[in-house]
Length: 276
Ligand SMILES: Nc1ncnc2c1ncn2[C@@H]1O[C@H](COP(=O)(O)OP(=O)(O)O)[C@@H](O)[C@H]1O
Ligand SMILES: [Mg+2]
Image (tube, rainbow, N blue to C red; front, side, top):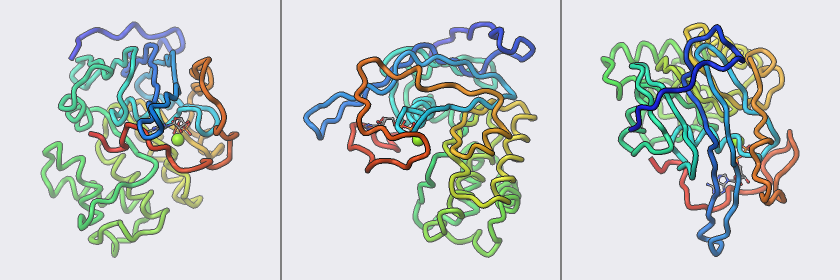
């Protein structure tokens, strides 16, 4: 763990406190071992700063590298070069580009919240505990953890009849709401959101907007990807154009225009979605 200090607040927003997250020239290349070691440079020179109480949105067409940036911050993907400085609630600064697995797991318990695009279902665990788990692993007493989990499930209109069932058989929208509840249960200083409203109806989308506003008001720094222009217009304080981080030699074929879905299955790379 390094103890470098983050740079002073940028002129973008001189009124805020010190930044909580600062990316300094991050780069990422995937090596496709199953395809003869083909190298796919995806990102280089990734630079941005995130402040408490703001929501910055990663912007750019599908396949440009938005989710990869969130996964580098969350530690799902390793970082090839550069520094990624995170200030914890205790003020200590860690360079995530050099953090070991134990440090990463600790920071996920205390500092980094993440709503992935899809819920990873653990068999047999009831929904209420899936949502309460981040609090339980942070040693919050089980009754308090489940009460907060229930409060979020209620806000997101997940019927109480489903709370004791595992979410494996839930609809896409129900799973997404369970995933959102789990991501918002902890009040972490940094919250990463990967298209959390993609399969939600209007009422639930509005509830997610409210949850985001609540977290911002409480001082959380949010880095998000939103497909939905309405949600983006409501919550984004600024956009970060990921297009400027595409390496000059990057292969762009296979990348599809904005608004279209993925062009195919996730390529089989070295890195696994749940490597930690
Ligand atoms: N685990 C992986 N292995 C190999 N290539 C990957 C992996 N994850 C993402 N990529 C590639 O990196 C590029 C950026 O992907 P991604 O960050 O998911 O884009 P976005 O979220 O902007 O749609 C894409 O070309 C994608 O195929
Ligand atoms: Mg994505």
